[in-house]
Every structure is written in C-alpha cells, then in structure tokens.
Length: 156
Image (cartoon, rainbow, N blue to C red; front, top):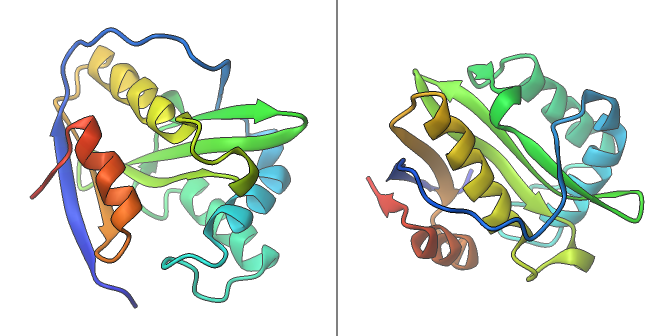
C-alpha cells in the first residue's frame, strides 16, 4: 500500500461562488458513483486493480461508517449528462471531519469540480461548528497535493 500523508485545514467563514449546481449526496446513485469513482482512479497512483464490484463495496463501506460516521450533510455530488461527474465523501474519523474520497471522472477533470466540492464541504462543516478538516493523500499523488495546498491544506 502506498504511503499516505495527512493534511489539515482550519475552517473559517469564506465566501464561495456557485460555479456548479451541486446536489446533496444521493444514496440512490451508488451505481453511477461506483462507475465514476472507478473511472477517476483507474490508471492513477491510487489505483490498486479494483473492479466495479470492489468499488461498489468500498462505497458501501464508507456509507456504512467504515471510516467513522458518514457525514451526508457535508458530502456532495455534481451531476452532468446523467453522470456523477464529481463527488466528495466526508466521514467523522476520530472525531474530525475527514475527506474519505473526492473524485472527478476523467472526462470532466481539470474544471475545478473537486476543489469546488471541497469548498462546499468546508462551508457546510464550518456552519455546523467544526473547526478543521483533514484528509490522507498518497505521497506520490502530486496533482492532488498541489490542489489541496492551493486550497490551504498543510501537511500535519
């Protein structure tokens, strides 16, 4: 398994401009979400040979509190053309909101969707009284680390 680094950000009130129409996390779209998630991770440093069934099982694991209590109130998705174009899944891991997964399908990549979803989750968490957000990222995932740093996350 690849080495992970922990990154955190202190939450604060910040204006956010609605660039995309988001929906609350919809449990009825697990199938589409699994397809999108597998598409996003395949052929990346985080891909470990999973197939669609493995991906469905992993989503079920998150939803069933496998990484701490799933926080549906801070988890969102962007739908485009009947796809789950991008999604973020937040859980309360060791009493700290944690990004478990954030992903964007390859055909929608590099449009700022993941960054936007992270900002929306940060806002939702701040509005509920949380003080920080954390994540664990593969050490060699330079693109993700760059995005997180640009958003204000620091290695902790």
